[in-house]
Length: 189
Image (cartoon, rainbow, N blue to C red; front, side, top):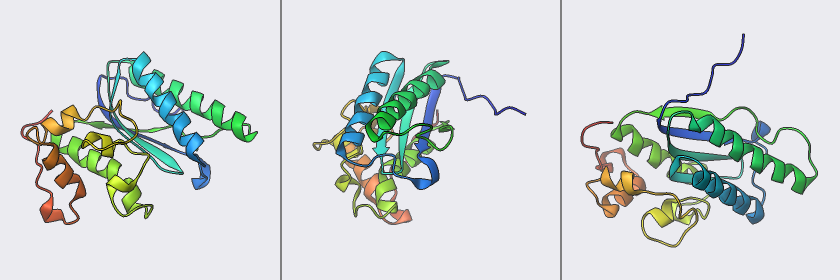
């Protein structure tokens, strides 16, 4: 029996991929920069809008909006380009990624905010840094107006879900306690 097809409907998706057996997929700054370059190229060349990016050493997370039929093509391009450069750089052969990418549809504003918080807090939860602003390889610092990477990621929709307030989005992301999460999305997608 074959694997189920990847979603092709237009919409917003949480996408993630990891290296095999938790091996380092991003070993140094050059690897991170290569991924950033490839992702920007794919978002520029296709009908793909990037809301958030967070790249850790073993995996990455993306929050993307696509038109119909675009996601599988864009992800194939991104992962193939990165894997080719990675294998060439390290004298490797074979798969750089453990399996196909994770792809979860985001169907409403509340889920969008929850996924965004999860994505940009991932390095904190993994024990790699103390604060989401501390992780260089995330779009979060740029999203809240600080210097940062992945400046092509567009946080406009996320900010609009927080009544147009970057500060409300920041407080939502950076809150430690469940009862401090106040940025609630009005209505649904």
